[in-house]
Length: 83
Image 1: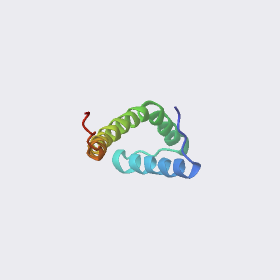
Image 2: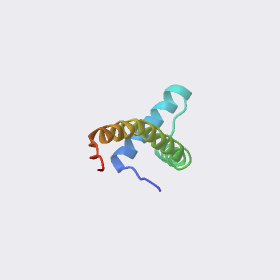
Image 3: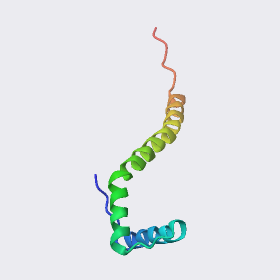
Protein backbone atom coordinates (compact mmCIF):
# COMPACT_ATOMS: atom_id res chain seq x y z
CA UNK A 1 0.00 0.00 0.00
CA UNK A 2 1.57 3.25 -1.14
CA UNK A 3 0.01 6.47 0.00
CA UNK A 4 0.83 9.63 -1.85
CA UNK A 5 0.70 13.09 -0.38
CA UNK A 6 -1.07 15.98 -2.03
CA UNK A 7 1.29 18.32 -3.87
CA UNK A 8 0.66 20.98 -1.20
CA UNK A 9 1.53 18.59 1.64
CA UNK A 10 4.58 17.27 -0.19
CA UNK A 11 5.85 20.82 -0.83
CA UNK A 12 5.37 21.64 2.87
CA UNK A 13 7.28 18.51 3.93
CA UNK A 14 10.08 19.30 1.48
CA UNK A 15 10.40 22.79 3.00
CA UNK A 16 10.53 21.26 6.48
CA UNK A 17 13.31 18.89 5.42
CA UNK A 18 15.25 21.76 3.88
CA UNK A 19 14.81 23.89 7.01
CA UNK A 20 15.95 21.00 9.23
CA UNK A 21 19.09 20.38 7.20
CA UNK A 22 19.89 24.09 7.18
CA UNK A 23 19.40 24.63 10.91
CA UNK A 24 20.64 21.32 12.32
CA UNK A 25 23.29 20.27 9.84
CA UNK A 26 24.32 23.60 8.29
CA UNK A 27 23.70 22.07 4.89
CA UNK A 28 21.53 23.41 2.10
CA UNK A 29 19.39 20.95 0.17
CA UNK A 30 17.73 21.67 -3.14
CA UNK A 31 14.16 20.68 -3.86
CA UNK A 32 15.24 17.57 -5.75
CA UNK A 33 17.42 16.28 -2.89
CA UNK A 34 14.78 17.03 -0.24
CA UNK A 35 12.05 15.35 -2.29
CA UNK A 36 14.31 12.34 -2.84
CA UNK A 37 14.83 12.06 0.94
CA UNK A 38 11.10 12.41 1.56
CA UNK A 39 10.34 9.65 -0.94
CA UNK A 40 13.06 7.41 0.51
CA UNK A 41 11.83 7.78 4.09
CA UNK A 42 8.18 7.46 3.06
CA UNK A 43 8.83 4.20 1.25
CA UNK A 44 11.28 2.68 3.72
CA UNK A 45 10.30 4.07 7.13
CA UNK A 46 6.66 4.95 6.57
CA UNK A 47 5.35 1.38 6.79
CA UNK A 48 6.98 0.96 10.22
CA UNK A 49 5.19 4.04 11.56
CA UNK A 50 1.95 3.03 9.88
CA UNK A 51 2.05 -0.50 11.34
CA UNK A 52 2.83 0.83 14.81
CA UNK A 53 -0.09 3.26 14.54
CA UNK A 54 -2.37 0.35 13.59
CA UNK A 55 -1.18 -1.63 16.63
CA UNK A 56 -1.70 1.39 18.89
CA UNK A 57 -5.24 1.93 17.59
CA UNK A 58 -6.03 -1.76 17.93
CA UNK A 59 -4.82 -1.76 21.54
CA UNK A 60 -6.77 1.39 22.32
CA UNK A 61 -9.98 0.09 20.74
CA UNK A 62 -9.77 -3.32 22.40
CA UNK A 63 -10.62 -1.66 25.72
CA UNK A 64 -13.73 -0.13 24.17
CA UNK A 65 -14.75 -3.46 22.65
CA UNK A 66 -14.35 -5.21 26.01
CA UNK A 67 -16.53 -2.57 27.66
CA UNK A 68 -19.11 -2.85 24.87
CA UNK A 69 -19.25 -6.63 25.27
CA UNK A 70 -19.79 -6.22 29.01
CA UNK A 71 -22.64 -3.76 28.39
CA UNK A 72 -24.25 -6.11 25.88
CA UNK A 73 -24.04 -8.97 28.41
CA UNK A 74 -25.80 -6.74 30.95
CA UNK A 75 -28.74 -6.40 28.54
CA UNK A 76 -29.47 -10.11 28.59
CA UNK A 77 -32.61 -11.09 30.38
CA UNK A 78 -32.97 -14.22 32.48
CA UNK A 79 -34.65 -17.12 30.77
CA UNK A 80 -37.83 -18.49 32.30
CA UNK A 81 -37.32 -21.68 34.21
CA UNK A 82 -38.49 -24.85 32.54
CA UNK A 83 -41.35 -26.60 34.17
